[in-house]
Image (cartoon, rainbow, N blue to C red; front, top):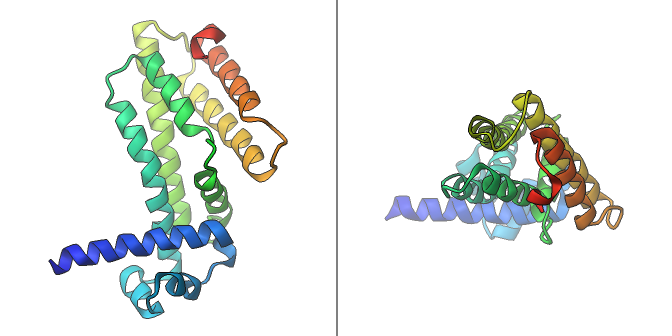
Length: 200
C-alpha cells in the first residue's frame, strides 16, 4: 500500500510540475513554485527527484508519455501503412490544445543548459522518428510508398512539422492549422510518391 501511495504521490507531483512549467516556462520555474502548487515541501520534491534538473526532465517525460501512449496505440492498430501515416501526421501536429507543443519547444531550448532534459527530449524525439521510419519502411516494402531515401524522408518530414509547429505555437495567427496541414501533406506526398488526395 505504501508503494502504491508513493507512485500516486509521484504522479501528482509530476502533473503539478507540468502545469507550473507550462504556465511559467522551464527558465522561470523554481522548485519552490512547484512545491507550493503541490502543497508539499521542497524536501519532498528532492526526495523523489534528487535535483531540479531531474525533476524537470521527468516532468517533461511525464507530459510526453501521454502523447506516446496515443502513438503506441496507433502502431498497434493493425491499419495499413497509409492509414497509420495519416494517423501519425495528425498526432504529431499541434491541435487546439497547444500545451504539449509549448512544453516541447521550451524543453528543446532548456536542453542546451540541462543535460538530463536534453537526454530525455532526444529520446522522445527518437521515438517519433522511429515510428515514422517503420511506417515508411513497411509502406515501401509493400509498394504503398515509393521512397529511395527512407532515413532522409523521415528527417525531412519530422523537421518540417517541428518547424511549422514552432511557428504556429510561438507566433499566433501567423500560420493557420489548415495551411500547415496542407504544407505537411504536400511534402509527405512528394517524399513517398503519393498523390496529395490520399493524405487528405
